[in-house]
Length: 283
Image (tube, rainbow, N blue to C red; front, top):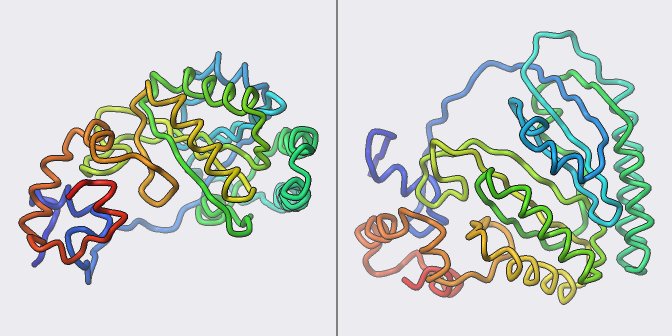
């Protein structure tokens, strides 16, 4: 079967998590290599919340948040024809990431140090930088944590400020030893039915929750965040930790039933289903 973007089923297949069969060939629309300009600036988290409408505007924007120390670093990235300038910024970034690598490993062993040690990371990240280089060198983050759990909550832009405040309360009041950056990304909506960013006319905020800790601790943190943020009807990231069931997932995704109908036609016997998918979707 061949499906292109003029076929309604294409919207189901774009994000189908393997439930509609095996995709053997994909045709991608690409563009010539280009450079990006990345501006990084340090702020307090309160500033980033209160000035959200201003700071979140741009071609590609993300926040790196440290809840323990009320710190937030803003990355604003856009296409440019400027000449490359990357050497000094790369040195600063490498040093910062090595500090982060040391911090995550120490605080895994001594969780009570998470707050003061994350302050070192936030201070290093707050150094203003302006980097210009090839797109893939900016969009690919070269720092890698050891095996760990991640989760993600995706809401509409209008709920972003309250979502960040709510997660901050969970971290501080729950004394969770979050020892890594919490990333807040601003994403334009798309038309894939099961995409966390479904909604062409909207802007979404995706908050990536990361913690390097024993599974019991990380699961407790993610569950506490999900419980506190349920009021926003936030969507989940299919490749990260979530415990939502069929009723919740149907409420998150307006085209859930349309997807279910396409899946049933393509795989009526459930050959491509597994226990985890059955539990999540109820198919």
